[in-house]
Image 1 (spheres, rainbow, N blue to C red):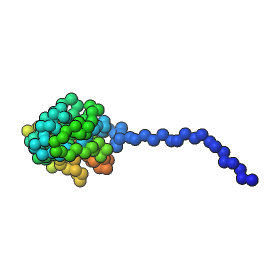
Image 2: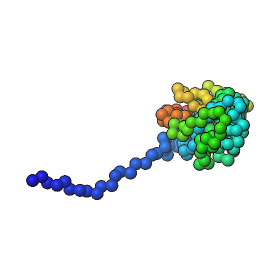
Image 3: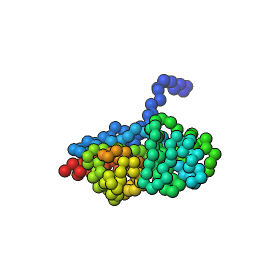
Image 4: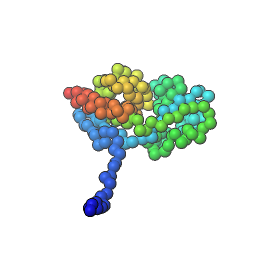
Length: 192
């Protein structure tokens, strides 16, 4: 006679999705490198004829010049090309849903799962970022609000200067550890 298997009430393990780099922060003299909270993001492509309708739906005027951005109410639009923007929403709203209401020709793709953001702040922030980024990050050449697709070391990033001594670095989640480590080492060097 076969023995009956004993039933046990074992709770399934709890699975929690954590953002890449959760809790990682580095402070060095003159600079701090830290993970920014999750945000909604979309990659937006549209011809010039559609920009006005999309701007209205997003509640802000999409920037039309290279190396510029626009911000309003926790939402930022970064110009990446003649017909391309990165939209970041930190206010908890869904820019993808806003764009879905627009009938004008455009392509909007949610990329919140793909990107993470790292802040580099302090008097040595520009030196830290410049350790791996070839752009001139002086305030004259890269003022507050300037945005650009560029590189940091061997990783492609999108760089935004949010304040005189603050940069937001957007990178793919798969490069997040590399970018954070690169910036951490550069911050240590900038402190000397």
